[in-house]
Image (cartoon, rainbow, N blue to C red; front, side, top):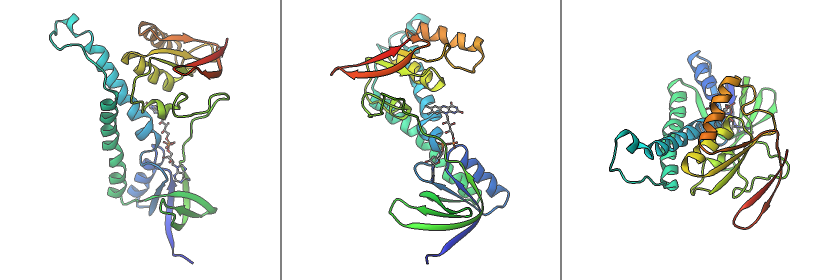
Length: 256
Ligand SMILES: Cc1cc2nc3c(=O)[nH]c(=O)nc-3n(C[C@H](O)[C@H](O)[C@H](O)COP(=O)(O)OP(=O)(O)OC[C@H]3O[C@@H](n4cnc5c(N)ncnc54)[C@H](O)[C@@H]3O)c2cc1C
C-alpha cells in the first residue's frame, strides 16, 4: 500500500473560500494541506472578480478616451480596440495575483497540492494528480470549499462559440457586433457593460421584474440609467427560450 500522508486539516479547493482558510490554519499552527484541481485562486482570481474588473477598467479607459477632447485634451487620435492585446494584459493582471496564492500558503507553512480530491472515508482522501498518480491523505478535519459551476439553462448549451458562460465571455479575442446577456445579475451586467463600452450592441434579458434582484432599488435605478445611457437594451420579465444559428448571427427567442 502507498504511503499515507497525515494532516490535521485538509482544505479542498483554493478559491477565495479555501486559500484564506489554508493561510489561517497555517497561522494557527495547524498542520494543513490545500488541494486544488484546476487553478490556485479559484474562480474569483482566474475567471471571475479579477479578470472582470480588469476588463471593466480597460473598457472604462476606452470609453473615457473617446471624450478627452471635450475636456481639452487633443491630438491623441481616435482610440481603437485590440481585443487580443487586451486579453493578454488581463492575463498578466490575473497571473500576478494567482502566483501570490501559493506564495502566501507557503509563507504560512501550509502545504499545497495540485490534484482532485475524493473522499475514501470521512477522514481519508485520495488526491489524483494531473499525471494520473495518486496520493492518499488522512486528516482530522476537512474544509470543503469546492465552489460552484455555471448552470446551463434549457436550450442554451454552452458551445464556447455562440453560447458562452461567464468564463467564455471574459476570454473573447474579437469584439461581437451584438450580444444577448441572459440574466441581469451583477455578473451579466458587468460583462454587458464592458462590451457595451467597447462598442457591442448589448441586450439584457432578465426573467424577474427588476435587474440585480436583492440589491437596494435606489442603487438598481442608478445602474439602469447608466445602462440606458450606454445604449444597452434591458428586457425585464422575459425568459430566453431558445436560439437559432443563422450563419452570421444567432437569433434568440424570448417569452415575455
Ligand atoms: C465574472 C465573475 C465576476 C465576479 N465578481 C465578483 C466580485 O466582484 N466580487 C465578489 O465577491 N465575487 C465575485 N464573483 C464571485 C466569486 O468569484 C465567487 O464568489 C468565489 O469565486 C467563490 O469562491 P469559492 O472559494 O467558494 O469557490 P471557487 O472560486 O469556485 O473555488 C473552488 C475551487 O475548488 C476547486 N475544486 C472543486 N472540486 C475540487 C476537488 N474535488 N478537488 C480539488 N479542488 C477542487 C475548483 O477547481 C476551484 O478552484 C464573480 C464571479 C464571476 C464568475
